[in-house]
Image: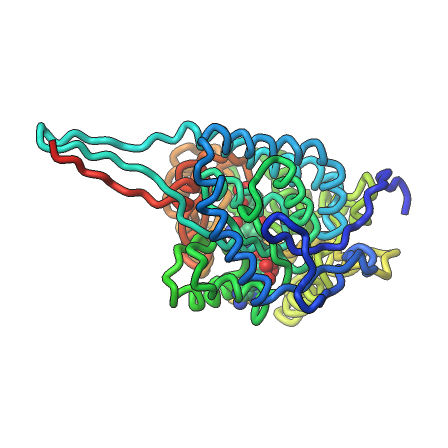
Length: 489
Ligand SMILES: NC(=O)c1ccc[n+]([C@@H]2O[C@H](COP(=O)([O-])OP(=O)(O)OC[C@H]3O[C@@H](n4cnc5c(N)ncnc54)[C@H](O)[C@@H]3O)[C@@H](O)[C@H]2O)c1
Ligand SMILES: O=C/C=C/C=C(\O)C(=O)O
């Protein structure tokens, strides 16, 4: 391994964090945390279940009515700000841990994941103190006003692709509104969430306000949180079928739910777009984070007059991407997160072959890597719209490219999916941009850009891609209960 980023950061063993203390499981059970870049064991993770979740939920319930409740909004906002500051103070360490856990390039974790995790706290620290409530005078009869209170104990269940970024995206507004939390990180990526618990404690979050239980989903910590009668709300990010399971088990206690689920996002490129810009951004929207981003544009539709030129130039650029060890400074694409996921992504390449696809680039391990879950960025063409590679979320460095002739036709194909998370449109025709944007069934639509975020804007998916929106006031709404008080005058 050449040009490896200098690091003294060591992987950590991960314990639960309950009521302000790091603890083992009652039965001391653990599982191994594997480095996807080397297949070596990074460390151990405490394996929690019902018992640990019960203990964490009880601590969170008690903490709701403790110092956290009486603390002024300004004091709580300062604590959130301090968490953001401490994340930045430990940025390199966190970026290393995130890179080791997920297989993503260190450079990406250090420039995107960790700074954004800090910003999630800084943003909501400021936002929370600017939130107004309504009041209405009803003639001379009555004064109505609203106030917000916390929802209560919130279960936060996370995926593995952007572990700290996505955890903080939920935890910051959850704490801002005075809730307490029981967090379940993804089993494959437990390290940065564990460090975040240390940071929360150091920043002054009272014991019991944030709790972390490691473990798996079904019959494990995840299920124990979603079925727990004393958890008031669940904030979940992950696959649609996990969302279904969580919704079923949350039904008995009628929990409030926020779901951010998968995507099979269309990237629609019209012939009048600026092709240089299209290619540069499409490289990112296809392959950043090994394509393991829910927002990745995995179905690329190109208007016929530029189809061949796009394919040639796109493939040329993709072949130049460096697939390699996440800690090498020039790596663009690291390792997929786990053996299980790697096998799953590869199985789609096999399906593509059987369906008669042309594999324009990639489709195999890069030369020189015998260990680690590496896959070259893969471009598939010639697939029928009914191929599973066009219909199902692959969540890896694999895109399909298809030509189109008519605007109506591409809109129909783009919407021909159960998913509805995001979409990208490339055109310089203003009217067409609006027209197509309004026709697409997606919660997040970008025109001539991708993943350009403003944390005040609504974020989330329709159809099987999610329930509800987060961001700005939408997050405040989910993490609070609004009461209206009417005073007769
Ligand atoms: N829309 C978004 O914002 C967004 C963001 C990131 C990832 N995602 C989606 O997440 C998926 C990839 O993540 P993943 O593979 O970790 O998802 P996953 O659904 O397999 O797991 C997510 C979490 O749920 C837990 N879990 C699994 N089964 C459970 C159960 N029965 N009860 C309770 N918890 C359970 C897991 O342990 C994990 O912590 C993709 O579909 C991706 O598109 C969506
Ligand atoms: O993999 C999914 C990426 C989600 C991104 C966000 O939730 C965000 O940018 O707020």
